Amino acid sequence: MQKTSVAIFGAGIVGAFIFNTLTLNGVSAILIDKQEDVSMGATKANSGIIHAGYDCLENTLKAKFNVLGNKMYKKIAKRLGEKIVECGSLVVGNKDSLPQLKVLLQRGKHNGVKKLKIVSGKKLKKLEPNLNKNIYYALYAPDAKIISPYHFCISLCEEAILNGGMLKLNYNTTCIKKEKNCFVISNGKEKIITDYIINACAEGVNQIGAMLQEEIIPLSFTKGEYILLDNSEQGLVSRPIFPLPTKQGKGIICAPTVHNNIFCGPTAVDIDKFETSFSFDSLAVIKEQVNKNIENINYKKIIKLYAGVRVKHQDDFLIKSSVKNPNYIVLAGICSPGLSAAPAIAQYILEILCKKGLKTSKIKITKRKPYTNLQSLTKQKINRLIKSNSDYGEMICSCEKITKGEILEVLKGPISPLTTDGIKRRLRVTMGSCQGSFCYPKLLKIMAEFYKTSQEKIIYKGSSSLVVGDIKEGGIYEK
Image (cartoon, rainbow, N blue to C red; front, side, top):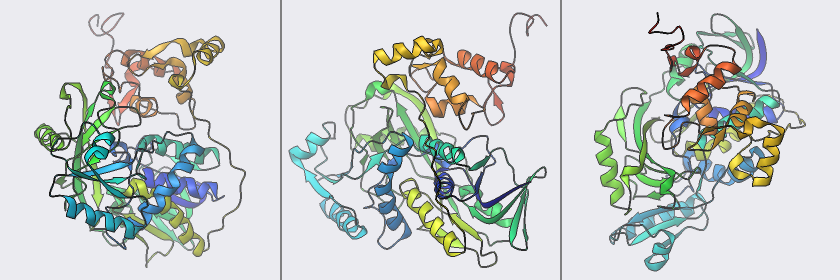
């Protein structure tokens, strides 16, 4: 049985920011998720764009928290040691698009977005040389940025753990009871006692609410499919390129990642439940839409097809305290621009809790040390590192240049990943051109040795294993 002040359900980017913000303010907090790692839901397949805030309708929570959150990211990235690229973004259009772009410009100014401007002609071509010849105008938002959403989520949780926060993964909550002045959370094996509950479960928000007899929150699900190009296509675009937005969303875009890949997407397909399959029909849709804005795309360089899901609640974020259980706060529909808004939402949650009586305290913050990235080091530093530890000289992933030393460093970290998928999100092992064809056997061997188990028991993700047995040395054929 564990006692804590605040329990947060949902280890996506919003839950991670809340967990981190509370912990760094001296609050005893626990983050709970039913998955085997953090950032396993919508966060994992997020576009990674910190939007400027011109697209959100005026006087909405989306507009308010988007603009506030955007301003917070640079400082947080520096503290965590996370990469952030201040590249700006463009909304592009043909010769008839000027009136719509002006509407976005005025909306952005109303929302408090700075430095917005409409560009055209040579200035536009200089910003993005590969724009389609039919593109005449664009709204330029210099404040837009790109990050890795799952890297941020992991780093935020690790920093919180280093400063006293607790993380419960693989925790399938079966019961929540209200007892006097606290809540008792159980998975049938162990209990957590807490004064406050924050429900940031995205698609699972109603499952948690139902355990407290809370009203059902209407949700809808929109699947977004993407294609990812090899990092050999770096430079095709320098910033996210958006079409004019529609009622379905911001549209199918072409954008760089912080790891120098290029992605195109997402589609917007309404679905009945949270699922992330990729339909090959969507490939043609993505190509058709992106080609209207960008030229010279080499689709032969596609290395990955994937999908994410946006969980929506009507047209705005829902953040409210329960009438029945005042110390229960629910967040729903934190879809785009949820990533941009997340740090500001976390600060808002802290303010709500303080008004309810939560006590904070000043703590001496333990700084999170970023994992070693050999590609960012000079040859001299790399040689010194290898001399002190030869594991950093053993190449495991040739595509992404990841060594055994870097993998072991992550395995020894505050959240030791239990799956190869978890290693991938932290280090990009298996995310290169070969998609793991050559490095998976080496990675499995390292993980099996580290966890002192067989390679058959190493999981890809969920309950999916990669190895079923040996084909020699007493293996399948001999048996």
